[in-house]
Image (cartoon, rainbow, N blue to C red; front, side, top):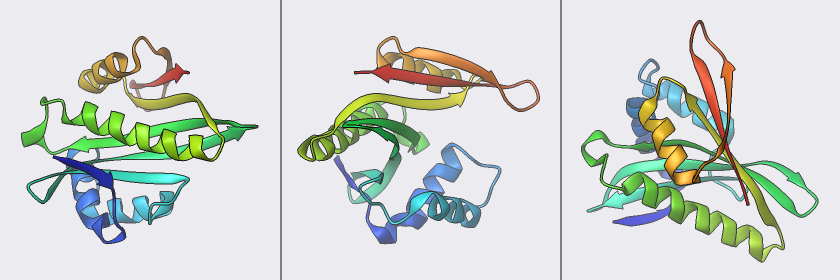
Length: 159
């Protein structure tokens, strides 16, 4: 298994995974456009990572600089998706940690410190909530009403 930064030509594969695992209600084309709108190709302020197994991209995720305050950075961790047949094997956790370490190292070399990380998911997505609670080790949580009856959970981890 190999974790690396995404390459420019891989947007289609990333869009398929994100669409299948997170947003099945939209098309792959719409997903590609959304990714482009958020920032594509990857750059130091918006990083996309992939995990490969046997030459196949089986998962991906995004890190983004949400804000700077002096020498500290607030990071957003989002859109982590692992193909169904590879879920529940620790791959998502490994992808998240390795990608975080690379982003952190990049910014430390520039004299910046990661002050906090946050992410969000639907409250009804029990698997994602469990994943982030375990990964962030007792994060701060904020629940906000969103759509009709659903609530969004924001998870924060300070350093």
